[in-house]
Image (cartoon, rainbow, N blue to C red; front, top):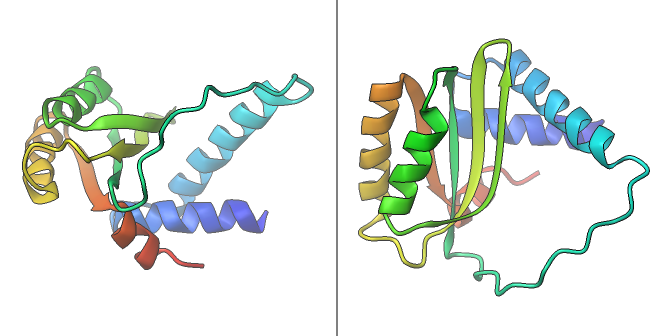
Length: 145
């Protein structure tokens, strides 16, 4: 349970002061139940090896807001157009609220993270969601246990 609480606190911190802790906790709990429930008793799945980028070449994207059609498509389109590769993504819709956590490889980013944030701010305004991009090093430094 402490691991769940720590995860929830890190996600809530990354999402900013507008994130209601109860809502973030409910979403995190639902995601964990979905993941653990789906994998309980199942044979382990081997993942194909790949050349993971070194830490420092990645960024964390968090997004949340009222669920509306096209949010994920708009965000992933902007990320792709900026030259980023999505390494991992978790999305959940719970009680009408959309949440997203994305790990991105930014080694081929066209421009800076600040440029990407500006582009995503435009997407967020159009889709009425809050989107935050942080360099992985900054995210880890801010969310140390």
